[in-house]
Length: 589
Image 1 (cartoon, helix red, strand yellow):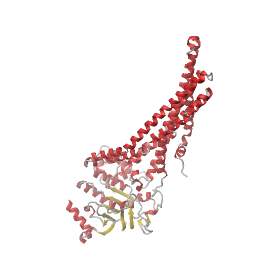
Image 2 (tube, one colour):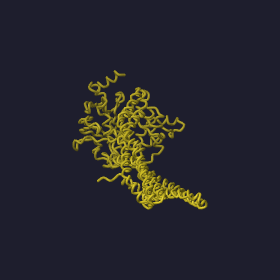
Image 3 (cartoon, rainbow, N blue to C red):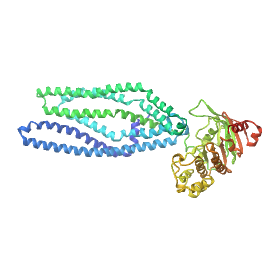
Image 4 (cartoon, rainbow, N blue to C red):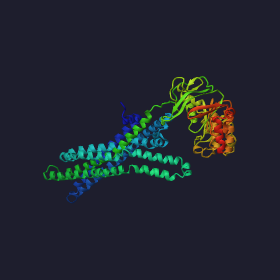
């Protein structure tokens, strides 16, 4: 049986229990002040007859009532101030804790989880920003307002029964109608599909903004603008219906209390004529019931927020509770050093979000320690997929104990992904640098220890980037900018190479590392890559075949299968698939 999300939130908020209790006490005091003020306010009517008949008594009573009103105002000021502080601290700490849990669980998921449309960056960051903040309703300032309104409503009923049970019962006869209209208002305001529509709009907007250069280059501004408008138009009829329903329900909610007061006032005059109550009792009941009705309205207004908070809690807990299909720290962590042998044995693979398309089909090959193997072929043949399987971003289809990807004698399925990735250095086509200094970006290559400055500069020298960094005024303390925006493509690649070399990997993966560079940058980066590969095992995905002429072995893939393998010179002499790819590349230059 699943736990209530509200109960789980309260459990998470348990360290702030003292703040919640103190906030509730302050809310009770603040709620009790208002009916007390209503009684004092009704006493004002008793002064009017004394103004002419007994002016001194009228002055004395006026001074007393004004003083007590001022005292109540001071008490309410202090209680509201304390309530706001206690609930504010509780709500903020809950939100902070939930965001930390949620973000931790996002980082714990496998790569395939991020491939799903609902788990794109825009949706996840929106959940962190908006969905988590909605949970403040559980213990934040809204809870204080609800508590205060409930205390006020109960106190109003008690005072009403004390001064005139007849008038109070009549008002209660309207109570079901007030509650029902409030419930309809909550339903009409909830807007079940509104959140999904907003998320879709955010995804469209983020897609355009994140790829702004591509959008401008391809003149897709109008396309994305129309796509954004379409999302807003899709539910227009439903929104109009919701607005009409909301208007009707809101009108009923606002008017029903007036009908109730009209009936109470009419009965009150009748009871005064019958000498059952005095006129002061009528005004007292009228005043407290007015405040009680307002408190019910305030409480009902939190209904949509409560519904959204509950939905947000379920969304967030669904992620928090999800167990990664490939847990980073679960599996063996061999003490024996990895020698660098990588074996692909009868590998089949489909991406989790595209199960209808088989990417790899019975692919087998062994990369020997110290060997440089280049993977070539048309786009979509499975080259980069092989590198992702080596990093255990995904697991291949299970076709028996002899099927899979192996490091030396170990099947990657049995190894902890964190251990696997520590053996690997990777340089991709578009390296991701962080908005930090060059020193920090390079040091990120090995987070298992404190990296010395000497190691960082040595890695930079090997990557052929040290001389460039040394010419900068701030040297290694220069900021790389967001995603390395302060650097050229070749400079970013060399920083990425230095980062990869810092961890002294047994296996180096190069995923089209020079494909996006101009000829001069490619030459400099290729020199750094050749030095980096050295005697270590290297798997290279090549876009330009001219960059893999020094490889020990070339593997040609087609539609997920290995169709040709051998040294570059032998493949050129055989005039097979590699020869055809090479000639096609030469003709396009």
